[in-house]
Image (cartoon, rainbow, N blue to C red; front, side, top):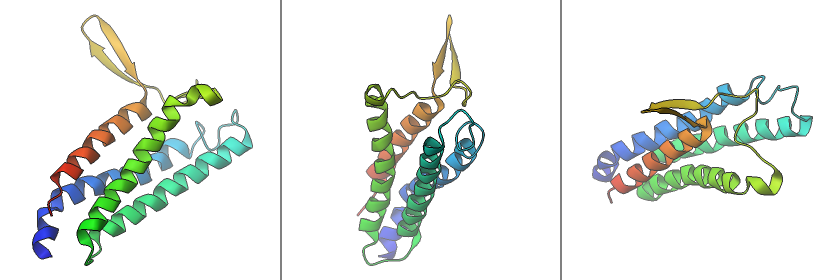
Amino acid sequence: METVFDQNFTPRLIISLMALAIAIGPIFADFNKTHATNPLWPPHARFHVVWQVLLQVGSSILALVLLWRNSEDYLFHVYLAAAIIYVWIVTFYATLFSMRLFDGALRDVNGIEPFRFKLPGRVLEVDTNLFGVTVFTVLNTVAVLLIRS
């Protein structure tokens, strides 16, 4: 088992960094006046955003335990941790593509500003959530491809 444990250090590290970002990032991005304490949001929407953030923290902790706790099912645990990250990714994209059904939006007028990329002759704006989840999709896929049995 030690050989498998060592040769999967890089994918475990990548998945761990994503789990930490998924746990910590929304605490700063969502527990403030743009989301959880936004006076323009209905109280029930604020309830749901706090619930969502706490769920992200809990699932991230679970992924970290699976990745770093010694186990006879070690390889299964690494794949399961990656699957937890994919659940977060897939649910984001499912919500993104179904926004028309519930009149959703990626951001509020008083929310976090999009990333701005200067291209020749124009500026491209990309929503911060969309940018982050796209980066995580690539990173998680790279991590899974690096897993060795």
